[in-house]
Length: 105
Image (cartoon, rainbow, N blue to C red):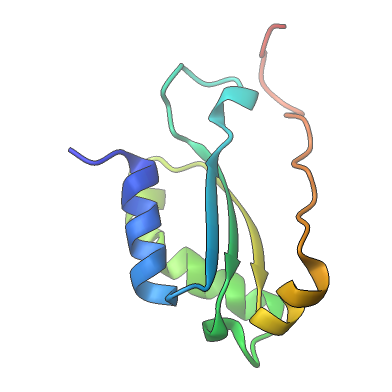
């Protein structure tokens, strides 16, 4: 059986046909059981985002991820770029530390 990360990767690649994609499982930074696959960060560069404001880009990605959201995916940090935007940006902000829960450390 494919992991949640593998399923998300497949659905994003099929639905967005990205020129660059990076999906990171950030669950280990949160107060969740080991192997939870509940918190992800997606960096995606796709022509599918051309002409779309950020909220429409997010809606497009969340639509693709709906099955996983329904099945327990808790958080998906999105960094979505057109190829021209990525050419200028080529860097992604670091994810903030978890602000909730009782993660000991």
